[in-house]
Image (tube, rainbow, N blue to C red; front, side, top):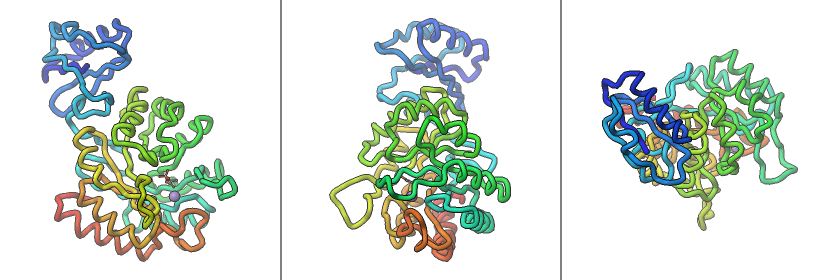
Length: 337
Ligand code: PEP
Ligand code: MN
């Protein structure tokens, strides 16, 4: 149920609705919008009577939300979610490029990459200190040491840091360094982890699960939103299909329905989506054309020496070329980079 307030509704009117929701044993979610405030509620197992709200001062109407994902739905919040960060805004028409190596490998390579991105005007650095690897014998990331290196990059180059959280026990340490906490594809339905980042007051980048439908993905986002963290960014990174010409099948066709069903911003990761660096630039440009809010790109100073995901990482000259192409394409589409 969604209670839509009048444009002129007062803070007291809103508080009154919030109290009525709480009195029903439910959780209120006040969602300020561009033209009016709406108040969502979660926690009900049966339908709620709209008459509970419709007579209250400042209330326009009470609407049933038909989608199973409530807070993530456009029905609940017609305006796009825009996430303001000190380094730049995500969503709302801007196209945000987030780039970096798959893993923090050592201080020198990470700082070299950070400096390069800073010079190019990229505002967000992404690298994993904790890596979800298929093999337990593969490089698992530097852990806390990796977080310390990321903190250094943030401090020296002013970049926003995006890094993955795999375990609730590390939440505090990751949240301290990260401007955006990444939840990886393999953990998209790790509900304890989703609830945990829902309680962190940091934006969450939620990757699509390896075989998740759009509805399952938005239900995963709902776990974060339901805890009161409304700053969720979706990230399409390819799904598993019968096709074996690429690592995954990058599903750019999910962007229009994701935008229609949800107000959350959506990024595209063509690196994991294709698994091959030659295919990354065309898919990155296609993501911009398809209406994505930005990209997550793996780049590495020496991709052939990378400890993880080298074959899909762009080297600096290849990134330069893509960066220029994105700048040429964006204005044609009325987008700013
Ligand atoms: C990553 O971003 O490096 C990663 C492991 O991605 P995914 O969770 O999409 O596989
Ligand atoms: Mn990777």
